[in-house]
Length: 442
Image (cartoon, rainbow, N blue to C red; front, top):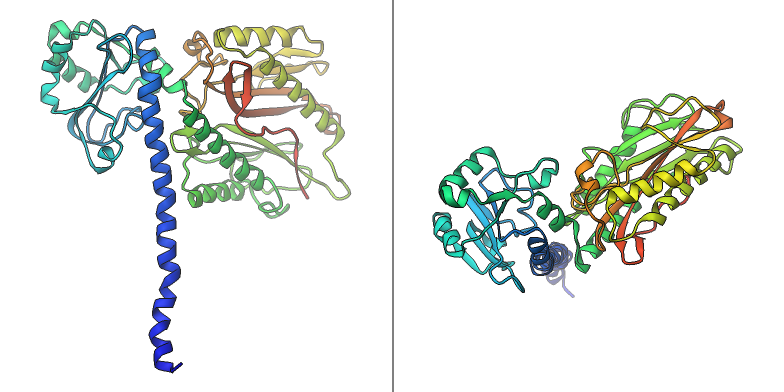
């Protein structure tokens, strides 16, 4: 073959890898888009009718404007809003489907996932609502749940003026409706949440290994930024500004995710979560840096970890659908208090009594955010403690044990455990394999 012909072939052959790569790169974006679209359809077809009827809301109006999206906008289809826009959902029959109208919302991406029966102008809102004559109109104002509090003061004023005084008197808080809508999940949502969990734990467990950590050189900040780089490579997000990487002992904790150099004998903990599609995780792992001659964590540390797993099992034993999150928390607290050697404690303020181990439980809702909008077995979510656990709710099983470790002078060490899963008819099931051991760094 002549050199001229070879040179003519060289350029086409060189660009073949680029041509092959272009569709593959687009395929993942399209695959994720299709999955998000199906989740939205499931949410509006399967979840919305039951939560509107359970909460006695005939119409739900979600308002937004350019630069101020409601926290639920992405789940409702997103889209571009100029001056003002409304997602309007009406229960017209009392059974079956909820009517869906988008007013002042559009764009190519919005149109490529068709969810709405009607596309109207925002100027038609009052006439539209008058024709349907709802008794209770839910709007996103809330006392506790941020995701249900997206309606700004000016938008609420504008909405009331647009509807007029008669209809404005029918406006009610949609806080419980939003919590139910976000915290109940279809099969497609559970699958996406499980994938978020796999991404999260895989990155985290790699970070707490010799792949990333070189004792005496690597800092806690180095570990955190390596994890952030993995999120970037995988096209993921996070509800954490930066993973919380810190030393639990035996020496000084040092700054979280800062310039503390990791050394042999350190016990490292990471608290973090990844976001995939609409779903967020919140989990922890622990890693011990072996000293020369060691091949396992100190016996006292391992016993402390095993005690923490006992507490976790107590939490799992009480979770079942049909009881409130507060009732579940009370049940596990009672069991802890009745177990010899354990006492209920305060977060990061353990008792001085070295004969007992202090227990703190904060198993909160998760999924739609790192700290989610649904039922929570956590004192820091008082309203959500009153909500009933249902099959399909996502929970972060989180606990803290403060227990003496002989090898560290008998002082109490904190053992935090946290992993995520789903409430089912059987009780609770992990969305991915939870942490069951102290990871080791050589």
